[in-house]
Image (tube, rainbow, N blue to C red; front, side, top):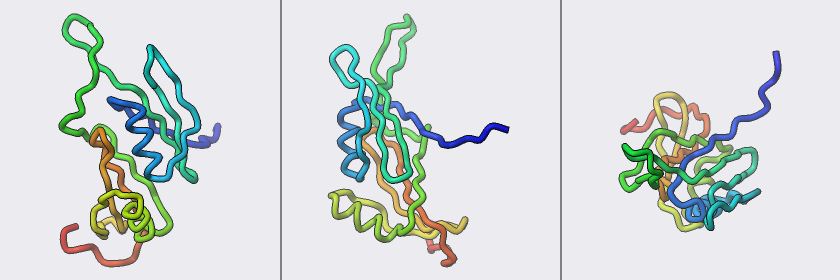
Length: 138
């Protein structure tokens, strides 16, 4: 059977450049960008072993006209889950970079986690395995 060597999510965003700046502030590096009709329409990013692609999202009205996506209320079609080696250190790193990550919480499924949201409302969870008992709110 052929071996799968990786998986890279592609998430739809309303402004690729704004999202690139946000993910760069999380420590990702931009590998490539594509321009289309005067704006950035796609970007590939990487941090350590995690890869991510951002694509300019759009939708259509009843007549088939292309419309920009409305992410003003956030959405959860996709949650980005990044496994890390030191979630407390990652939370400290996020704070140092000017973000407001959630408090650390141990989930019932054995992961200690913190999270942030990107400019389009995507939830980004950072987690590591733990033997600690679940937090009160988990």
